[in-house]
Length: 90
Image 1: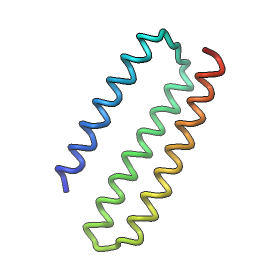
Image 2 (image 1 turned 180 degrees about the horizontal axis):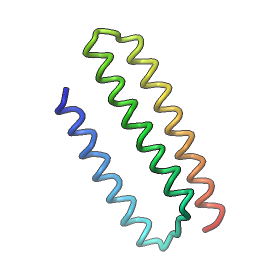
Image 3 (image 1 turned 90 degrees about the vertical axis):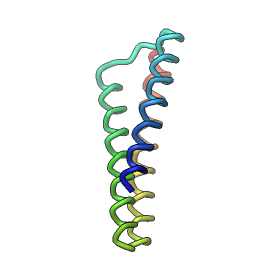
Image 4 (image 1 turned 30 degrees about the vertical axis):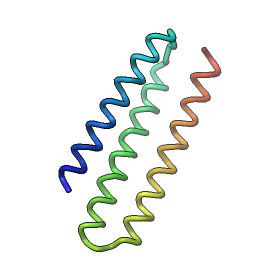
């Protein structure tokens, strides 16, 4: 299961690098609060992956499903809020 965490981390790193390059190419400016919201979204998503991994290892599939769902929805809400803030001032 540690391999899954490694692969998720590598995928998030590649996606983050791609987003950073796209931001620089399109000359999009981000404020401190937007960086903070993005950091919270990444932390919540990472915690959700960790919770799902832990609960699957303990054979608690219903709890794994619910914790994954709650953390994913929370992270998506934060990302959507950040997206709207960026679109509003750029």
